[in-house]
Image (cartoon, rainbow, N blue to C red; front, top):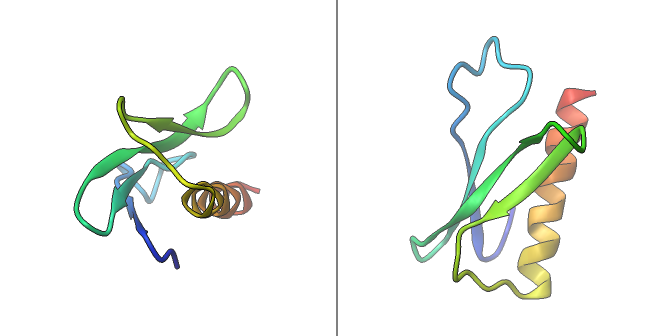
Length: 74
């Protein structure tokens, strides 16, 4: 659970999908980016929207969500 962020699963077909799509949203309602599978690196990555800024706590929360998705895939 994040103090400042909400993670919303937006995977198109979650029952059959190999990888997940997660919107990262500020608790104040701003859409910040998406976490999704990055095939070239063979891992999940965060794709921030332009003009977004993150402090260390928010980045740690995003890293934690990426780790959770990684564990689901394993």
